[in-house]
Length: 51
Image (cartoon, rainbow, N blue to C red; front, side):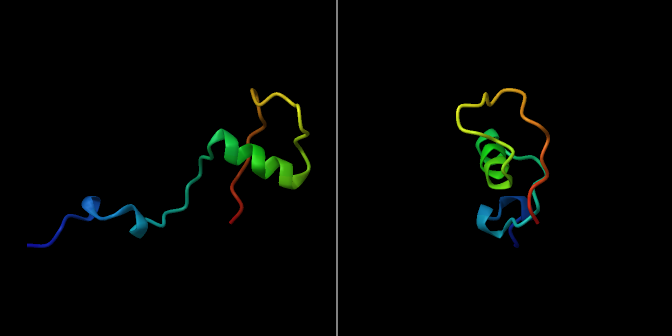
C-alpha cells in the first residue's frame, strides 16, 4: 500500500503561501522601508510575499 499524500512530511510541501504571519509582515515592511521601529503592529497594510 502507498501512503496517502496528506500524510507526507511537511518538508515535502512547497506550496506558495499567500498569507503571512504578523512577524513576517513586519520583517517584510522593514525591508521595504515602510515600517519604523516603535510603530504599532496592529492594522498593518496588506502585503504580498516576495516570490
